[in-house]
Amino acid sequence: MNNRMQPHPFDHTVLYRCNSAGKARCEPGWNWQPRPLADFDMWYVVSGSGRMRIEGQSFEIHKGVCVLVRPGDQPVAEQDPDDRLTVIYIHFSIHDAQSGESFVPGQLPDRRTLVPDTFAFETMLDGALDSNHAGKLWAAQEFDCRLKLLLMQLYRLQNESRETQAHSPKQRQLIGRVMSRIREEGGRRMALDELAAAVGLAPSYLSVLFKKVTGQPLKTYITQVRLERAMHLLTETAMNVSQVSDALEYANVTLFSKQFKEHFGQPPSHFHLKAMAARPHVGGGPKR
Image 1 (tube, one colour):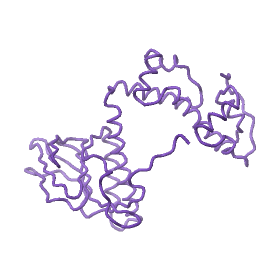
Image 2 (cartoon, one colour):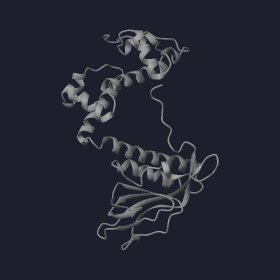
Image 3 (cartoon, rainbow, N blue to C red):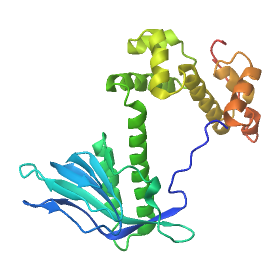
């Protein structure tokens, strides 16, 4: 199966909230010089600016900067007196779900992450703070889930930053539009000329740029989206294998079945809802 999910580092861990968490505007004259921390601290800048030094790294702090402080770290931070900081901070611990031992932080995201979509991230942080309320039903379980989502988001942002740093924001935006267009069309096979014209690029350049930005050929991505649509039709409608093949404009069922099995590891008949009576499908479009 080609699209297996990679396990994340927190598959077998539990995250517990500690007593210190909140959202605060830093007082005039504020500076942060704590003793070495005994737990983890997700420290995020909502507004304001300043500078932080942690474990030999020194960097500017401003809206969208998230710092993941580890046990034993001793950060030093100060704010611009004319641009006071407002921060969200959440202290937590991580333990192995089976042994209960403390988690070794070697697989954690880097200490500093720049978050581009601040609204969405701050909404997630607010949800984590809300789950801290004592007496809330399943508060501990909710906190564990929300913190894991936040950490996974930091992983993704750092991974995307490393993978796309060679490409301009405009190039990534264009490819994002192409991918959205393909997904919107579902199972329809789209000509390269049509996709290129939609974003104002030469077809040959679009092919090259798509591969550089995403790491996979454009044709491979189109096939992937097409097959995911096929899976939906097989498992959530009454259409049989032949009808799905026709609807997605495959030249024949044999080709469809071959591609489907290569992608999902099982033939399409394995997923077909046999309990549902197939209905005739009209308007499958021209075969290619």
